[in-house]
Image (cartoon, rainbow, N blue to C red; front, side):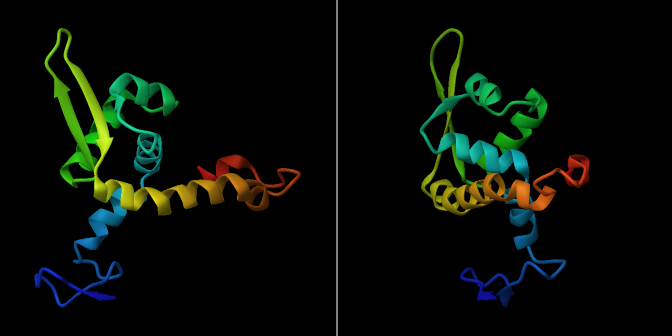
Length: 129
């Protein structure tokens, strides 16, 4: 547990029900957040490109995810004056700082999926879902 640098709380403790750390953990533990941040590691992207890369995400969920990331200062949204409007999303310095641990998590998942499911897929993949 770490002392609160703002003095708003005695300590940050994600295990405490009322700690604001919980909402940040909820945001970062979301699969679409982890994937969006990973996609933006390569540089700014437009909404359509993000949607194509994050196969299976609905426009509504992607919009909600991007708004939450922007509200948390993890990404910036830049609107370029053109017709039609050109909007790009990019990681902030804070966003880049969380990209590394999220990349490690994504890599771990890719390397250990067979360990979790079993090499002969003894467990039904739907159990993860």
